[in-house]
Image (cartoon, rainbow, N blue to C red; front, top):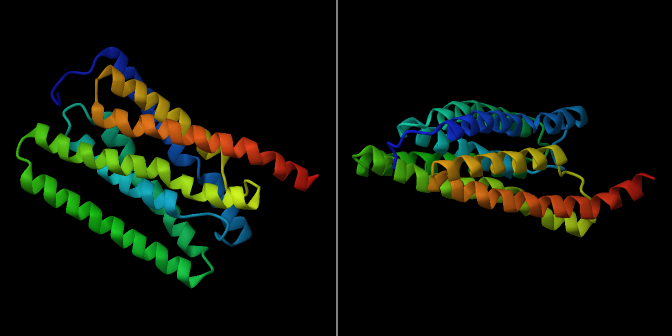
Length: 223
């Protein structure tokens, strides 16, 4: 239930989850540096950052209405700001107008989606439990979307036969973060936190398999 008091183990995993989540949110810094160094973002996709922004915003709201949501609330404020910064950098270094407009449209769509979720939950839900359910269900959807977004890139990786554009640091951070929050959710229990993070762990394992499968091709090409 929304009002259940967290146990000590869950509190510890909440702290650890904020640490791993912070690592996940900071892991794109290397990618942003590479984009700024080359002056172009064409080899990367903005979809993970757009999905991440919407996901952080929804979970921020979930943490706000949940009586024990302080760990979820705090870290997603940071996450929302960082994801927005990454999108700004991505747009600044995008040299193709069609790609830039596509990012604008997706950002606008994410904003409309968020406003719609807020209007629906705050307008229809009257109790704390109902609000937790509303934002929790939305968080399940956006969380799955965030973890699944990088899978879009895997098709081009397989077609090219190399992992250019994939970040092992980001994949590893995603796996560690989803694993910690899965344990946190099991200790609660918290169904809404559990589902997207469990699926997220599976998605990142798929990415790891593809990365190590085709990373050898990169090494052979560099040789």
